[in-house]
Length: 420
Figure 1: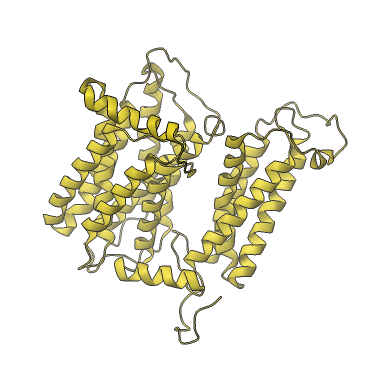
Figure 2 (figure 1 turned 45 degrees about the vertical axis):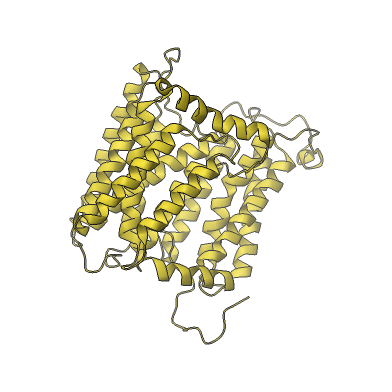
């Protein structure tokens, strides 16, 4: 369904809620994500041999038992592919056609990967995986409709977005970062009203209130810093005259409540205390000159990440540094949360830099920042071998990728007027 013909005809087909708005950049994003899917589907790349059953026979073998975590992971991992593919295709065709074709592309890619998995003894080819991957692609493609102005529901959402937030590609990038932050805190996005889960989700809060020694100060400081950084981002994104702090407060309260309803999530006293500190800090941020807010936001996000990286793990855990990309992230749905947590943090750092610095930045700024990011994160990850943690080269790569993404946004399209 499309909007009435009275709508201006000069609006772009795709409203860039993602950093890359040109067709070739969107295609590059689709291809990069497809390459990651291929890597994750075919890993490990060793000991390939002919399958015991006839080729394609796995399509007729529906498993007797389904692992809920595996099913969920197959849906979630293909949703971004459907989203990116639909946004890329929507520039040249109707939104419904783009969504349908993106779903077919996701299903086709999944089918190809499952066929190849027949020859990999470490993997199990299954028709369930194809069905769930296709479902994830379809859900992602449907979500893309909310980012298109010429669809009915997309037009409504974009109208609300225009009333509350500043215009521009960098502002849209900031909104994407906020969404990634929320997703990282609420994944795997599976709600439940089971009483036993609710008790477990609130038990940590209950015990910490009765025994303050249970409070982990590193977690509290991490929450406080990262929440404050997001408060700074919302202040910069909100249009003048809009109650930005009220919006952030409601978002933060909804996030804390949602944590108690999501499978695998808990509501901790550290999170609640960190939210209270962030809300108090946001009141101070509101009184500062606008040009200081991005610098303070950058400082809070960097400090929160550093505290989380330096926090000691269990004394019983000893692990060598992992050099295999995505080895830890492919084991469970929790790996998806880890990817989101790293991406949004360094996307936020790069975004704050672009807002705080003059428009005409040196050409090498992004490259220098990427090198510094790689060195700093590698050092933090490397020391975790002696800190009871799990050092991982994937963390370094994800942080560098997060830093680079906001630099793909056109420099001339700044969200703040006048520039700060």
